[in-house]
Amino acid sequence: MTADAAGRFLVTAFFAVVFLQSAFDKLIDRTGNVAYFSDHFKDTPMLADSVPLLFWVLTAIELSTGILCALGILTGDFLWRRFGMAGAGVLLAGIALLCLLVGQRLAKDYAGAATVAAYLVVALVGLGFF
Image 1: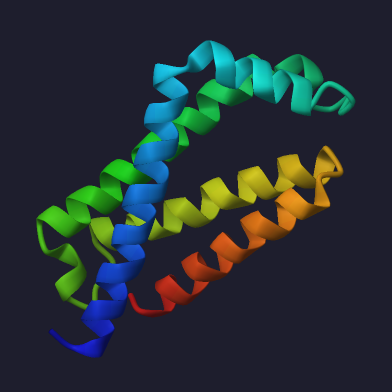
Image 2: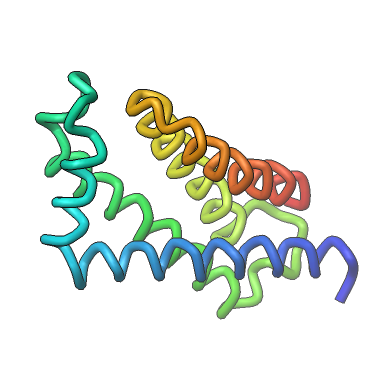
């Protein structure tokens, strides 16, 4: 395996784990997660009333990201320097992270936004491998 392929594997596997776990957690503990997000965004006028809808949109994006990344790993798609399932999964990870970053910034949770930004850097570096 080349160094580029190893980089694609690691980034794709990283996001498969992160987003599948996050999506499954949201699906298994929907009530707890919606309550957490409702409390987190209660003082954010732009998001407070939309939390249930945005919860499902984010869950769908996270699940799609995790599935694409997992399929990219299982099919060996990451082995070739082309934009296939693995690349699409990493791109979708970046989009999901931008959604999270916007929410954290609107909620004025700057520490949370900084954490999301670190994940976004991984996505940007990972896209460079594809």
